[in-house]
Length: 361
Image (cartoon, rainbow, N blue to C red; front, side):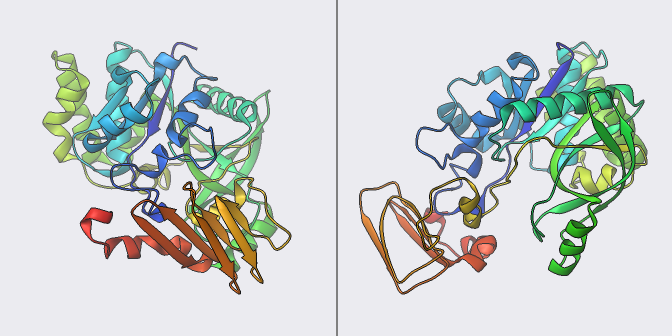
């Protein structure tokens, strides 16, 4: 539909995928299987199954615009917008409201917010779920919608959504959100999984422009004031990037989860009908469908495993890596760096990256 839009957030550094992911090539510009497009382009193509491709915008930072254009030549440059400063997702979403406002001459529209770096194989299921989320957001006056991922294991690295009353949208069920919870302990995550009342929070949101603008003004008034300044600037003749450049420094640096979603009383969740993985660390490579040997080893590249189990190799060069007498080790080779770490440390690579020489980041 022409009054539906998608905004793809492409601002992170993906430090947990070092050394493949670097400052000039964040995770969303990487691909992990031969012949696949990068994660950002995969996200763009999935979104184009739901809204016209001309209604899809990528929101990034200034340093990544050229990198995105080089990695995604099919993506029109006029649909890539750089934030004037890194101010977290509340500011980015407010900026999206202004971009779409200018595009539509301030007619009320709907837009989805998608992270740029999720792995999703079931494109049809994704399109069906996102369409249902649009329908709920447009039917519920002032409603804010998030897509909930049915959990498959007691993850401690994800936020959770607790569901409440069930409703039916004709095309499927959805629920009022009772509460958002941050990353839990393993015991609490296990209790969430066993209860059946929780979803993973994938950071996928859908709302009308009027709904999210009103919610920002109500629950985050300082951010709402700056959004108002940007919208007035556009109406006075500035472009959205020009108006944002003038006022962006006034935004409070805070995520939309904390500024709005955890405070609002009109939030709904639509259960996902698709597979999902946030590909948050090298440990997630195991979940991307690569072949394993009889000892659970995965090799993207040439490897020999002897008396070794549960290991992961990622190497697109022609060298051979031999594993002997080791278990649960991740090895990643790039032309200028090699990572060797225990799987249990894979989620903590940010601490390592901070200690690297600048030339290797």
